[in-house]
Length: 114
Length: 113
Image (cartoon, rainbow over all chains, first blue to last red):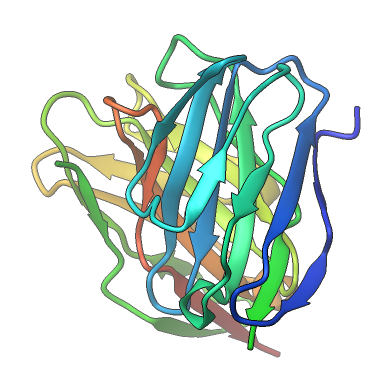
């Protein structure tokens, strides 16, 4: 199992550009989520999905879109990048249905918006 | 709404000494608590979790955590620290509405040789 994979590892964007952060998992997990990590703030939830075709907003969804067409993939789209979106982005997945399930994280994408 | 507090930005400890990284939580209902570790330029790795039962939870790499319901705490501990334990540690509680994790701000552990 590769677990949770993310691409790219690092990206530099100019303000106003768009891009898609990729996330895939091979554990057949129903639940997938995106977090951003900023210094001194821990990780904050952006969007999440409980299965293919179902997505919902987290704590900080503005400026980001998601879709879930397959169980394996959960891309995060930045439509018009802003410097405030400079952060490290983590994708996570787990089984759905019981709250004690462990979430598994990808290696992260470091994004710099100039 | 649930929340997690990690009151120490950094903890310094000498190699071989016991270490404690503090975490307090606030939830309505039963808490589902987790500890993760992040090494430099890496993702988060799961260490341990508390669901129910024994208040002392054992996890990976010799770490354990003590759940205290009356003090609403879930402190991470290790009897003898290693230099390789130096990393960023996050406490988290399950958000029952979204099934996501609500994280504390993180505590940087520095273990000196």
